[in-house]
Image (cartoon, rainbow, N blue to C red; front, top):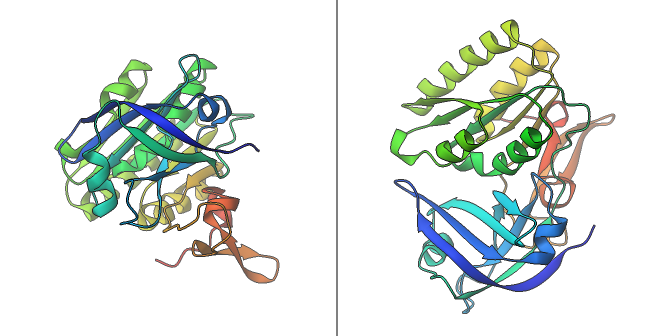
Length: 262
């Protein structure tokens, strides 16, 4: 699988919600190779503070124009510096990285996102709808004004249910809605991205209903290519427990493989 370290020209960097941003940059090599669910590593400043690149899910790709888009929120120094970048500036990007979603055999899909986790699901939505596969989505956010991607989902013509409120409150509502949808409607596959707590809970629901569930995991990463081992995480194995690297072996996994510790 090819990956590239390239200098990319920023085309757009704008705030789209209360703490949500979108950035579009030109990266033809990455655009051609990128798959839904993969991520990129961005150096947020020309200086070395912060030293490490930051990982971002590939939000959307325009293969013809050679553009790549990310969606992000400001959570620390790196993303704060990134939000100050302007159109025309250059950005050092490494990617595409990791293993993405598998869509072979999908007849109908339910997408489950939480907060900025929708960034992992938008390119997947694009691919599924191009294949005329029915898609619906549930998104949970703490604050309705923080929602990212609502209008983008609508451009694909899919039904999006947005739940908001306290984290426990919307996660409980999300679980009930999932139970209802999986019990009443034809869903062959589910895909999700969000907090460990949300993914663990929704994994239990999909497993009860016998629905394959691919999830994109959050994990702190340093190198993004499996060399530093800092994103090692516990998974089930024939020997009980095995460690796998989220950046190299994921970030997308079958939910049944994950050893949840929440």
